[in-house]
Length: 167
Image 1 (cartoon, helix red, strand yellow):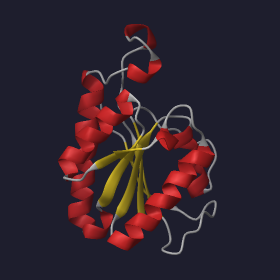
Image 2 (cartoon, helix red, strand yellow; image 1 turned 180 degrees about the vertical axis):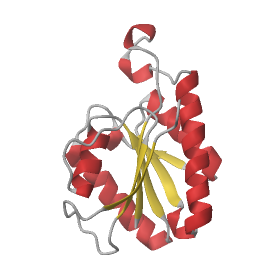
Image 3 (cartoon, helix red, strand yellow; image 1 turned 120 degrees about the horizontal axis):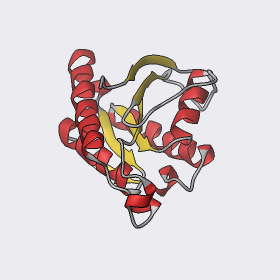
Image 4 (cartoon, one colour; image 1 turned 180 degrees about the horizontal axis):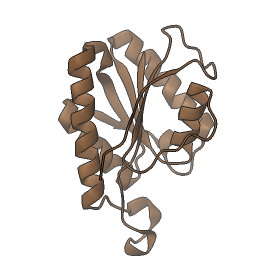
């Protein structure tokens, strides 16, 4: 089972927006999201239909939602918003969402994509891979392969790629 953990693209600074939840992507963030979408599309072409996300599950926070929309448009998939991926939530909620999406993807024969925020994206990647000190910048994605019988085990994942756009 392929899992894509995506951190939103570069966004406005806090002082440039009316609040943290409405910070929008800046030009670089939009470029990062387009690059991620194109990079993941190439991976799907290479690896087959099972590598394509069934749905893109995103935090409802503007910068994450915008990132998800750009990627989903490139991949021709729908997005669904999940409060369990918002900045107010932690690993417990993220793993509830991941578990739900893994079951959904098993039924539909595809992959899982979650779009959200740090520190939960980094922490989730570290937990799935059984690593410490994992770092994810804005507009980056971890591509992780989980065993077909994955049931939440720490360290069960294998890193396929860490997608980082060159600047």
